[in-house]
Amino acid sequence: MDKILVIKLSAFGDFIQALGPMKAIKNHHPNTSITLLTTKPFKGLAEKSGYFDDIILDERPKWYQFGKLRALKKIFNAGKFGRVYDLQNNDRTGLYFKLFTPKPEWIGAAKGASHRNTSPERTAGLAFNGHVQTLKLAGVTPVTVDTMDWIEGNSADFGAKEPYALIVSGCAPQHPYKRWPAEHYAELCHYLIEQGVQPVLIGTEQERDVTQQIAQACPDALDLTGKTSLFDIVVLAKSAELAVGNDTGPMHMIGPTGCKTLVLFSGNSNPIHHAPLGVDVRTMQKEPIADITPEEVIQKLNS
Image (cartoon, rainbow, N blue to C red):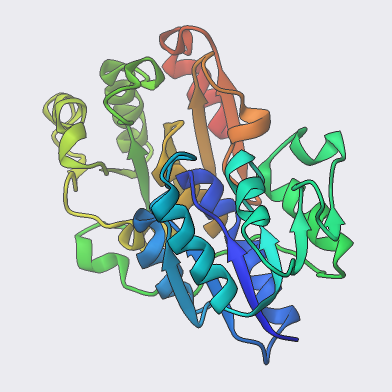
């Protein structure tokens, strides 16, 4: 077969859920050159995975930016891609399908695709499950959750003392309604310490306001705010006793490692569609999220 193109542009959680399907595609085509079309935030992850021979960064041009669309069309057709796996499946990739001449085999939801999945079940649950269903149409099986074993490191390098629990108390600043209150996290941290488990606070500098509140209320917690990359989070998760956090990107890195993971949801997103992958992922949801009590979280962790 000619070269293969895989398309996955965003968003963060969906990209992580697509890693298992990407691995399955690589395993199904072991001797074929595979290129990924993605956006800049995911280049590092894609390179680290080892699933791709080349990566093209998509600037996601608007429909009226004809020059950029012509340049993208030239890239597509010069690539001589015999098959495209569309793991994005939206209007944009439907447009991209039209830019190919001649049309390659196309596995996805685009109109005219050779292996088209229009089943309502594709979007009924997690993105991962929809990918499994779509790839099966092209004979790509099995598709399993990527536990990211290709990310290596030593949790001891961060000063964490086992047993420890990861606390992910922040989220994107534009979504404050997704944050479980800092005082609730502090109460949970005190409980963990009583059980002999060290709380480890992780987050970005933008989330220091909430992690600092927790650290001040619970000085025995290890504060790693601003000190961990996405890869570091996976390393820490592999040795963690458990993890509790909001509906935010790092939880999607933690769940697939097998760590006992509890994700707290507000009413603004649906765990059926947005929960992380993993063999021991649990969710709780209330609107507002502050109505989830620390006692309920502790009970859920012990169930």
